[in-house]
Length: 140
Image (tube, rainbow, N blue to C red):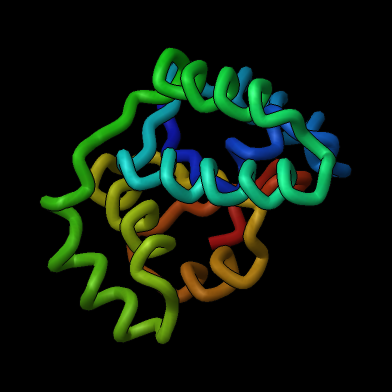
């Protein structure tokens, strides 16, 4: 089975975080991982903040960014925009997060996230299967 992973989980594969082990275990749970291609931009921005704070070397961040497409199937996000926009308006939530949600719902696979706010909002969306890190069962 595959799953859509959002940036909140993927970042945790590479940084010191209380949920890092759960994020790595989630990756092992699914046969394949997929995400909108914009995920790389989100992850790069988070890595940049770690670099600025001195918590991650720039060279390590660059290596991590190069590794991600080897383990995550990146899918063009443009076809998701109309449905994600409608969802973002309905939920009053970010477009980027809704891109992940729409991708997961269209594919009929879980969305794996560490974002509690997103998980709660998606709990009211029909056809969503949301897996929050550290929670083995679906919350939606």
